[in-house]
Image (cartoon, rainbow, N blue to C red):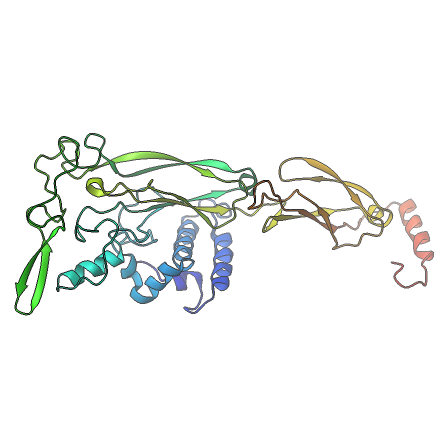
Length: 380
């Protein structure tokens, strides 16, 4: 049974988006595999946290869960990869779900109502003009990748390998022996349904001639047995753009599961997570790094060497009288911005270390320095 995403993240049902994101980041850091190597329980918790956040960060999925609970994502339509979810085409750590295409909650409700003579839900992209069970669009696919901040700076190509339904090459996805679109079923006129009446009710049932497809395939393709799709391994290269932010979702239109009998394919989505970096803290397009500067340099002024995220070394001027906790700004050495060619800034958070072992000469000099203390306010 799928776990309650609110309970997994430890938030109330009326929690704000900010509270949900805050809880997610706290838990994902706690259970991240890098911090818990060879800990299966932490790995499972990490997956649960990501699944829960995937539902609650999306307004449509959250609304569906609030209304229908686990049933909103039954039969492969949810973001959870837990029990009752079905086979996972990516293997461990990835997901397979439907983001609202044919076969989703709307189609389930529509098909249930059609049985009682109602058709007030409109037609889905895959079922338009051919009924709800006519050739359906392929399901959307979702994968997730965790990258370093440096990869987010430069961008990279992520290769995904997965197993899914792909268009049959022999019949071009039409399911026919000659590889051409099958003619419209004359019994249902392409709707995929036939009407019967029982008393006051008009009932609809899948057309027995075309099995609800809306098209009559007389000779089926021997490769796919008339389905138009075959199950196979696929490899997809996804380009992650430079400057991408943690939690971003990339969409590759038409690269998801193949549609049935020539219907459109679903889309492929890639959720990108960015690991916390040891040297830099990211704030939008800006980067913050903490540098220990000698007390003498802070007092007298000077220059320090600072490494940037793109492996350069900069000589940065430290003004005389710089205080601990101040930030020095280095323009244009942050993350790539959303506008082409733009970059954020790098901020140097000034810190210093107090020496614990002093020579007698050093102690004497510091004592002499202390004796020269001025009565002027703000001297030190």
